[in-house]
Length: 62
Image (cartoon, rainbow, N blue to C red; front, side, top):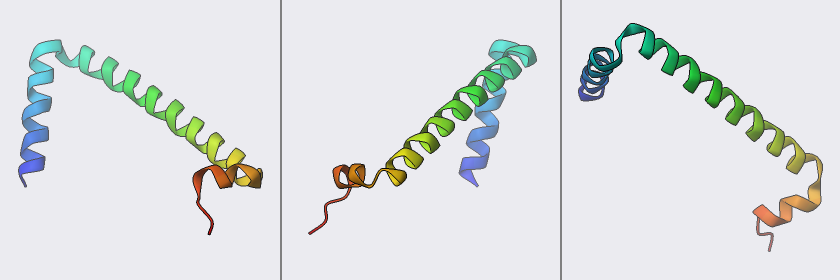
């Protein structure tokens, strides 16, 4: 319950500082950044999965 209250208070502070347009713009920018990060992580995962020689760098096989 405290997490929800904290998010509510934090969003109230953001709205009072930047207004609704600033909050919307920042939400869109962060959403685009998260999309690109997740897409790049997916690409790295697929590359390391296809190329089995790279797996040895991340997993210690004994």
